[in-house]
Amino acid sequence: MNETLKSKALAKEISTFKMREYRSAAEKLSNMIPDYFYHVAASSTGKYHPSFSLGEGGLVRHTKTAFKFARVLLDNPCFGDKYTLREQELMCLAILFHDSFKHGLSEEKYTKADHPLLAANFILEHREEIGLNLEDATFVSECIKSHMGPWNTDYYTKEEILPKPHTKYQNFVHMCDYLSSKKFLDVKFEHNEIVE
Image (cartoon, rainbow, N blue to C red; front, side, top):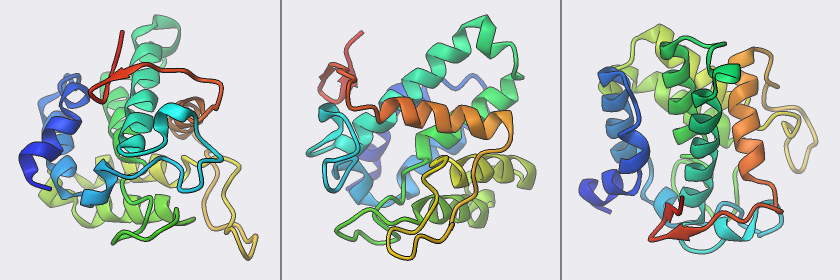
């Protein structure tokens, strides 16, 4: 998939970043993540996500929905005033790329249980290329690592492999992802964009 198509897929979300450096980081990341992100379903089995996030492009629609929850909540002063603009931007960056390695470094058939670690490590390893300083890259990666919340064990060994959220930032990212995955949701999409 070429860079133009990748950036267009998340262009609406990327345009909402108020701080230029984070908008630029989002644009760069959108071109660096695996191509499969843009076409796979949010759930490889269909058991854990609503119908709008299944099928071709489902993971993008799930991500857009989680991101929409974040922006709507942060626009409400009851929630948004608890965070600085920088914190809001970094949480939104984490939400936009929380599942970017969901099927592994190269596309595998099923969701990788450690996909949050893969995405978090990618951001840390490529922070200079993305344009993030170490503090910002660490903030984003910590939010991504814990986005699964209590579902933090390996499917087979049942060992804990992911951290649980423990800061208000990590809890916010987990909450937006969690809400986006609820099967009762019925978000309308047209051309992979949320219908307002």
